[in-house]
Length: 196
Image 1: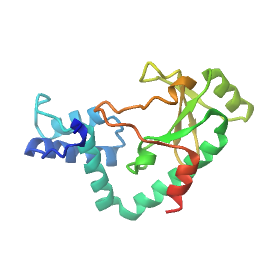
Image 2: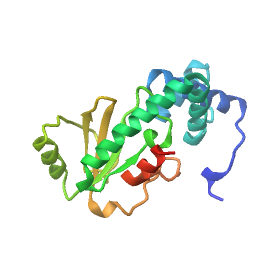
Image 3: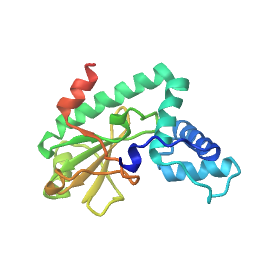
Image 4: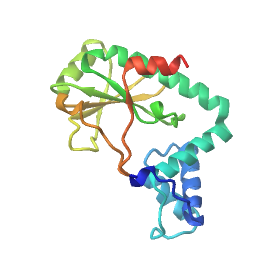
């Protein structure tokens, strides 16, 4: 069984860090799991040498936190983000788009961005497409060597990260740092999710 599929009991410090990191992500808009865990450990008076929970453990706590403290507001916000994501998937259909990240996984909140994977021969194609439609965007730093560009645009709901990859990467399964596969969905799958 892969390491990330095993349910691992959290010891006291790991559980406390996971819970505090989830709260920081929900309330302060931190999107980087490692940063949230480091800040949580500091707030709890623990050294950074203590064993941190993995991202899946923090994500589970984040889901629980949002369910408990943000309930209906979170559901409405998530629904709005997913509808905006669907509009973007339809708009960008020429680039074989996929929704990924917290909006798809259901952990997105008021500080979250919509993450969309695009597959194009070059980032210039996407840039020209956006410019021809009068859509403003800025470049952001790519965090992975396979990513050709990250174009950030604003929507009425949230900012959207358009992550441009070469076409041959479409069949490659992307993973989180902790080894879990990164979920992604096409427009039809998102429509089905929204109709549930």
